[in-house]
Structure formats: C-alpha cells, structure tokens
Amino acid sequence: MSCKKALGRSMKAALGILLTCILAGCIMDHRAASSVDSWINPLPRSSEEISQTPLARKRFCPVSESKESEAESRLAGQAFVQLTEPEAAMLTDDGLPQVSGTKPFLVRGVYLNWGTGRYAVYALPGGDVYLFHGCLGRHAVPMKRRALVLRLERAPLNVYVDCGMAE
Image 1: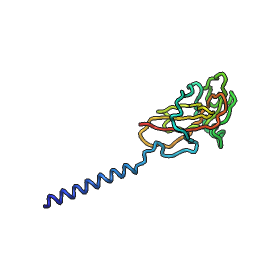
Image 2: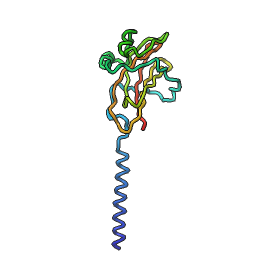
Image 3: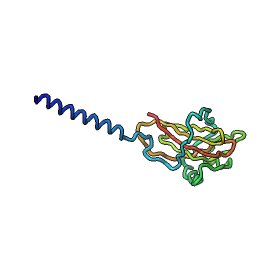
Image 4: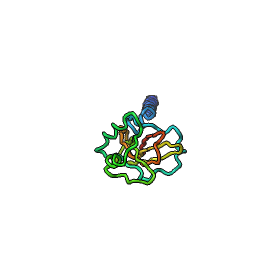
C-alpha cells in the first residue's frame, strides 16, 4: 500500500511539474522585439498582396550610421521627406546611385538584428511603400530605428514599416 501511495505522490508531482511547464510555455513571451519603436507601422493588408518583386537594391540604401541622428530629426512627425540629390548623397555617403525617372526620399525604417538581416522594399500599387527588415536571432531584442533613402518615381502616399526575426 505504501508503494501505491508513493507512486501516486510521484505521479501527482510529475503531473504538477508537467502542468507548470505547459503553463510557463503558454505565458512565455515569444516576440522577436523586447521593445517596440514608434516608427513601426505594419501593413494593414494581407501579405499575399505583396506578390510583386521588391525594389532593386540599387534603389535604396540605409542612411550612414554617422548621419542617423540627422535623419531622425528630419523625419520627426512624418514618415518620409523628399530630398535633393546632394542631400541623398550626404546621408548615404554617396551610396545611392542615380536612377533615371526617380527622386530620392528619406523614409523611416526599423530593425532588430542589423548584422544578420536585410531590408526588402516594395512600391505597392496605389502609391504606398512597404519596408520590411528580416533578420536571424534567438531571443527578443529592442527594436531600433534606421532611416533609408529610396529612389521612387513619386512621393509615397503611405509608408508601412515592419521587421521580423527567424531562428
């Protein structure tokens, strides 16, 4: 009889531990970002609408790290700003070649892990622009800002900004 009681107690303890682990798994936060920046503006439509090809890499460039505070100041209260050619060259340290029929625009961007990711930029039908930074990582990290200079045919109507992480 005492063996059955001990077995029953062990089973109850094991069940308790199992339930605790299950509940902890449900409560754990599996988000990629440990903090969310105010520049994030997720696309309100389904991602299926982004079936088109992203902009060519020569049509966008992150702002140089040394110019990031200036870019943030220029984007205070607005998602994009049209730039002159000299302004675009200065903000990117000459990293953005001219493309016929386009104008440079400074736009908001966010990211999680810079070294393991990259941006994809989409000019959507209707004049919207969607910027997404995808990266790799194993744990949540604070979301950070990084402005970009884009070459577009016209000013965007809306700028959607998002980021994500895969393991």
